[in-house]
Image (tube, rainbow, N blue to C red; front, side):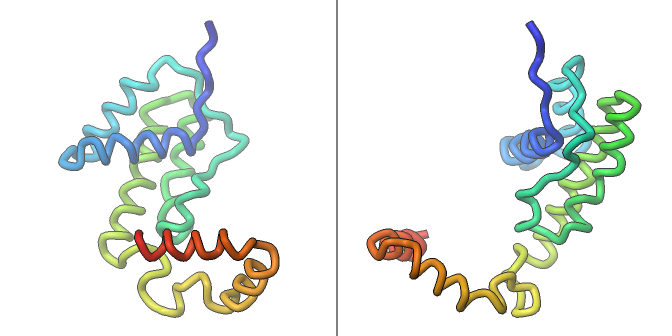
Amino acid sequence: MAHEESSVSDLFRRAQALRRERPQASYKEIKELLLKEFAGKPFPSLHNLTIPEQDARAPEEDWSAGLPIVRRGIQFQDWKEIADGILLSLEQTENYERERGPEGDRDDWHDRTVGIEESTKKGVGKWMPEELIKLAERQSKKG
């Protein structure tokens, strides 16, 4: 039976999950857990080296810091190197959030809604039924 190939995003999400499960674990321990879990499995494709959902957490230069190392690991078929790159990106993202807060929460310059807020409201108002808008507003007030 063939193993399913994991993407770089899958590996990153797994590292995040391990971090949540073991918040006191060091990055080295998380790396060892990743290596145990993925050793012997097919290597990710070079086709899509990205972690798209991280763009909302930190600037691209932080979350993408480890991708060149991941790429090299895939090219040389070295899980240790892939794990090193994934953990570098995870560490950079966590450090950014710890030091500066989540992306878009600090000031107007970093707010991604600046300049598009009116257009978004207009578009949502035009295409989204009123009852869904009310439901979304209630949900956002609860959360």
